[in-house]
Image (cartoon, rainbow, N blue to C red; front, side):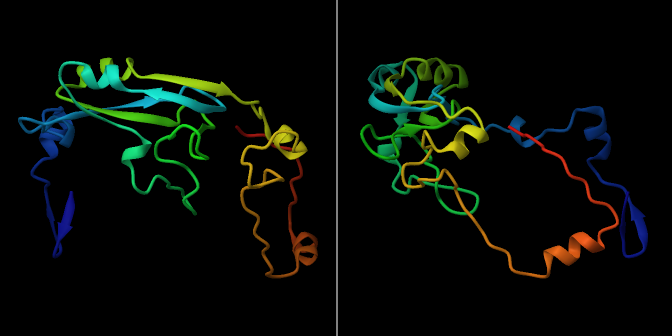
Length: 182
């Protein structure tokens, strides 16, 4: 229950949501809607040599296939735009997959099944690049993840607040260990 001006009110959709009969946004598909399916690179670290989407474009029910060449601003990121929206075009710095789930293309079709089937018809040729398997290998710097970052450090920030030595001395508990995360 929510409260409005001091008196409890019951949500009008509460019973339907509890019973599972309420429509959710995914249930409300307007007639004539199109569907999208992302084609992933499937490559942990590889350079895109060639991309052919013609078979996907020719599939019945496919409206269009979007690639990196269709994206005017092809970068995004949490703090800075350092990741391509779609990998490519071939032969460019953005044409390198650094994760199996990097996006290669987006298929727009008349049904979700058609979009998924057409995405499997996309053909890409890759030049495999050495994989950096963990943080220790990245720190060694033998293989660069990003060519413009010779130490494999994406970002370094120096924080200059307070006295760290005093903070350690004043801490009630200090936990020291080595932790590894994916």
